[in-house]
Length: 567
Figure (spheres, rainbow, N blue to C red):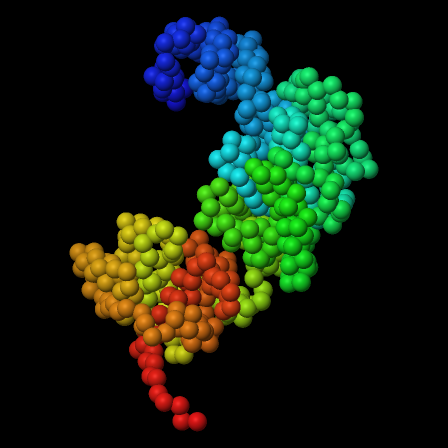
């Protein structure tokens, strides 16, 4: 309960006592709000405050909502006491349902049986998406793209959001599109179910709205607000659901939300450059150009390829803070499921690992991890590399080497592969691959060097790498460990790509730990290595660049000489 005490004190400090309603509210908040009678009085006072200070009232109602959720499930209370908090929770959710998407979702399914509810079993996992959608509604962002694994509810949460938007802004036209007519016809049927089926409370939330008309033929629904005496549908109704392949010119406009769900049909379409180009042009000329000034966009879809529709939008607006691209993968960085619900139907870690082991690599990364997998132009395809089970050959290695490509955070990774050399073979037995700043990475680097004790360790001196090396050396000496650590700047007469390409054959001959024998940093390292393209744009190149440095360290560096052509 302590967090509610802290929140209550914050509310007390925020409330301006210059208005009588706020004086009443502040006095009530000083009392024991865990008493249902007091909390009910706080709720009624909050409703009065709403007339003069909407934002303050919302903050108080948010406090009430969370406290009633806790108390209605508090087994220390009697059933009768818990029921009273449960009833107040219902009132609080209803009050918030027009401005708070999370409250709307809970209230929408209030009457549904527990085993039929969609949102509550998934609330913890989908909370990030719900917050993103709230930010889209509040104008914090103008564009949102969501990529989640199959069957976790991404389309359902999108359709519920659009039903909310239809109730909030019935006079603003929306367009929902996808790759095919059957898909968009499904949108229409689900929307109609939400706004008309009594198992949902949409009609209670939007008690002053009515359905003017529906068209199954054109997948359209028109909503009227109180005072709108129309009896026929408008030319541009509240929502039209139509595929990107259908005729849209002159039939729709978008004043509120352009909703795009899976514009790319499948992997087959994604790997066709011609079909991707056509789909992107269709998006621009058939969907985006139907938007009025100020309309927003919501995209939901599998990221099949870097240059799919979402990918091209991301590239164009990568520095625009009003564009957000949300990806929640099936497995987190610890190889644990992100969608294993506490109750209801979810997906266990074992399920996702089995899918990973069963699917084609491209399908797994795109459909389940939200990362488009590049097939063409890969310099180090995973099926062309060599692997071992994490057990080194018998006997002492001829040499142990480490090369550290220093980074200081900000998106780049510090990459330090550690190679064990046996004759002509190099085993990448360990790596450091971390995006933290120097306070995070330096202790890890020190520990790895102390563990492996390489015969030669090198640091790239660019951007302060020399200072980094000196600090690592000092920490090791404090432990009584003396290693041969050197640093130098990367050659400036050759591009980073050229350096990597030049030693690519040697990198492909290295042995890497098999997938089952990698920790999370090793996995991230291999992911970056195996998706590195020779032609095109790479977001990061730290993994392959550090391996190139390791090869150069083994061979004493690469010497480039420019001479006059003799032919």
